[in-house]
Image 1 (tube, helix red, strand yellow):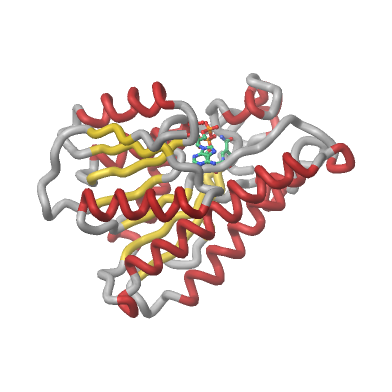
Image 2: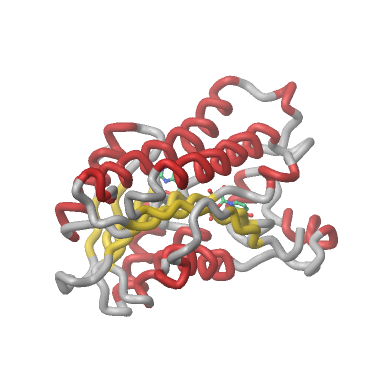
Length: 261
Ligand code: NAP
C-alpha cells in the first residue's frame, strides 16, 4: 500500500513531539487528542483505516498543534524505520513514544489457534513494540547523542489474568510487553529515557468486535470491582501522566488502569 501522510497545522519549533502507534481509533485516538491538548506535536500511525485517521487529525487540529497521520504497519521493519524517519524529519526530534498499536483475534481456545493468527498477534503486539522501542532508544538515548525521552508501552490486564477461553495468545503477547518494560527501563535508566507500561482493563473500544463480541464489556462488567468498563480517555490520562515530567522518577512501572480488576 502507498504510504499516506495526512498533515494538520504547522508547528512552532520548540514544542515537544510525541509518536503514537495505532492512533486512528480507541485508546490511541484518545492519546492523540490529549497529547495535542497538552501542547505536543503528534505523529501517529494507523494500519488501514484512513478515514478514521483523517477524523482524528481534523479534531486534534482544532487544538492548534501539528498532527500527522502515517500509514505504517508496526509489524514491518521497513514501515517502522520509515515512520520514525518521517516523524523526525517533520518535527526535528521525538520526545516520547507510546507503543499502543495492538490486535487480538476471535475468542478461541488455544488448541484451535492457527499459525497466521499467531504470527499477526506476536508480530504486531510484540515485534512491533520492540522495533519501535529500539528506534526510540537509537534516537533518544543520551549515549547516542539524543536528549532523552519517555516510552510508554500498552500492556493489558490480560498479562496477569491470562484470558483463558478467549485469547491466551494475546495475553502471552502482553506478558512480553511487561518484560520489555522491565528490561529496557533498566538498560536505559542512565541514558535519559524512562520506560513504563499501562495495563488497561476492559476498555470501551472496537477491539472487542475484533474478538467477535462487540458487547463484551456489558457481559464482563460485573466481574470488575468498579462494575463498569473503562473509557479510552481514562487510559490516555494514565499514559500521558507517565509521559510527563510529573513522572520524572518513575521508570519500569507497570500501572494497572482497570477499575480494580
Ligand atoms: P482498537 O480500538 O482496536 O484500535 C487499534 C489501533 O491500532 C487502530 O488505530 C489500528 O489502526 C491500529 N493498528 C492495528 N494493527 C496495527 C499495525 N499492525 N500497525 C499499526 N497500527 C495498527 O484497540 P484499543 O482497544 O484502542 O487498544 C489499544 C491498545 O490497548 C492495544 O495494544 C490493546 O492490546 C491494548 N488494550 C486494550 C484493551 C481494551 O479493552 N480495549 C484492554 C487492554 C489493553 P486501524 O484503525 O488502521 O485499524
